[in-house]
Length: 358
Figure 1 (cartoon, rainbow, N blue to C red):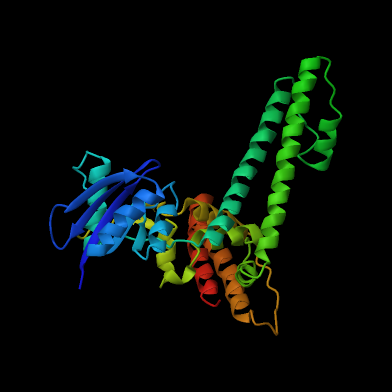
Figure 2: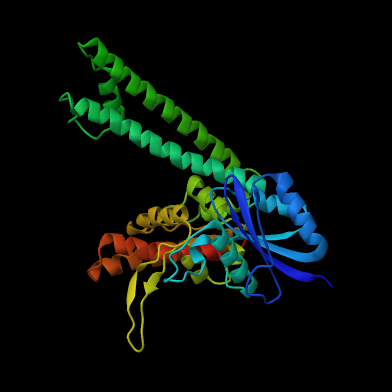
């Protein structure tokens, strides 16, 4: 039988540094820096796999999963590591590519690293679409702010109601400027806003079509039974989390989203801090946004004769329980933000329960 070689890889845009540990050795037996190119990677790992049973790992980063897929095609086990959960030594203030690769190799061998779920290429494409929607939504907000600030500097503040209503947009279309350049700037701001809003509408239509396609329809139907969860939110949860069944308990998913309180306990003294904010910030934001809807009075509807009845019952229990929890915390003197965060944490548990029924 071949010996097992644990390989820690520090992957960058232009280069990859690999440290290979065989057996219980304290120092790597092989260290290599190579170009981040498929030919160079294949050449190194083919030679290594001829002699050893190779197990490789690297940190999740902006370089994506290309390196993972290269090794997978070679038949080599490769795992992607959650960067925020890599153990750190407080006294270690030196950081180089070689030291990072060595650290990954040692911790991977000892089993002290936490891996993440790698999406398929199709799942990654769907995730990219949802992230594009998030970016375009931010662009629309910015475009609106640019336009309002431009008008405010000229004393043109709309005071007959809320901004961006039908009447407000009619008011904007009726504005005239004596200065030619000011009129040109105003027109450009209006065109920029119209373009970004149209782009956002196209992306929303694409997400809706994807949500009710064959791959996602079942999961989206179940998630949208929850109050505050529509198609865009459901698709955001599905594409970011990917596999809900990897969490054996709801608290594991809460921890993954960084919604559990941190702890600084010593001896008999227990001291809890704010939420950890570890893990995926996009999903955490979606959960908190959905949680705010539970401050409203529950609207309970009956649903009979459906294969989704189990998920429906979970959604109705969530609506009653989370509404009561929000107002119970408010009555205890908690601020609205903390109450909504606590509701988001419990909502995560209900989502976990619904997705286990798929």
